[in-house]
Each structure stands twice: as structure tokens, then as C-alpha cells.
Length: 220
Image (cartoon, rainbow, N blue to C red):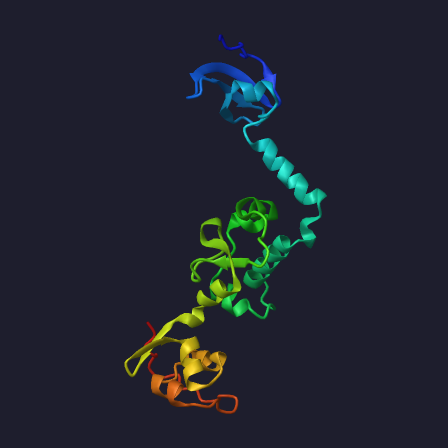
């Protein structure tokens, strides 16, 4: 059946420029220009029946409108975005030293909530925002939604310490010697000799001992 000539016609934001053949199903394909300036190849049936009205820019605008209209400031997704930026930018945030204080930044694209929403989608129930590589910042290619368990497994506390033939994480060593994980982590950060850090079975009062000249521990 001969395809209906759509050249010059406008559908939504799309103006048909020329026919460029058919797809594998035999449906006519049309080369169109969108009002925004982009060009796109659209199936004629979708144009004529209102299924496709733009190159994609309309959907993005509708998304932004949805964010505004549906008051997403009260959603878990918006809260995750706010907390992410606060950890990296607010020096008064109690976690700043683990984020902005050590160079973790939010990519320029994610400075706008609309872009963050477009890239990450809705926040699945029970999941939280996680960086895949903890030494890199927040960006579309380094973030995912993860469970609390996955977050814990990806913690910087899970570095490996080798001592007396055993290779365990800080979390595992702390459990083994019977002290708090944070206590052992602080000892490592303060460059305690590895034998002192692990053989001191109980936390000292305020842990005041710091030797700035002590060699760094053997952390893999």
C-alpha cells in the first residue's frame, strides 16, 4: 500500500522533511525536524496517531513540570539529593570530612534536581544512593541504588589489613579483638603501629596516644 505523503506536515513539534524508507516491519519512516532544532526519524503511524509529538524534548519538559506540580520536595528522592549535596558542600555537616572534606564532589549536571531525577529515576523502596567507587564523586556513571548491606560492604572501613598471616577487614579485625570498629579505624588513621592497634584489646581512655612519626600500617 502506498504510504501517505506527510512531507511539509506538522505533528506536535515535528515538521516532516522527507521520506527515508521503511523499517523491518514495512512501516514508513520520516525524517523530521523538531521545534527545538533537533532532528529525528519517526514512524509515520506514530506521527499520524499522535504517539510521537517531539524529538524527546517534550517528555523532558513534562518531567520537569511533574517535579514542580507533584511537590517532589517531600519525596525520598529529593531528600537523597539534598543530603548528597549537603555532605559534599556543607562544612557543618557531621559527615563532611568523609565527603567534601576529602574531595568528593557532586557533578555539575546533578546540581539541578531535574537532571538527578532524570538519570536515577524514582528511589526504590528500601534502597539508598551509593557511589560505586568510594574514591570518586557523585555522577550518573558512579552511582546506583543499593541496600544498606551493599552500602556497608562498600565502606572505606572494608580495607584489608594483613597481620600474623591473616587478611581481614577493619570490621572483621574489630570483631575479632573485641573493640568498636570506629576505635580501630581511628587507630589506623592515626598511624598506630599495626601490632599496637590490633594487640591493644581494649580502647584506651580517649585514645590519646598519637605518634606522628610512626610508620604507616600495612593496609592493602
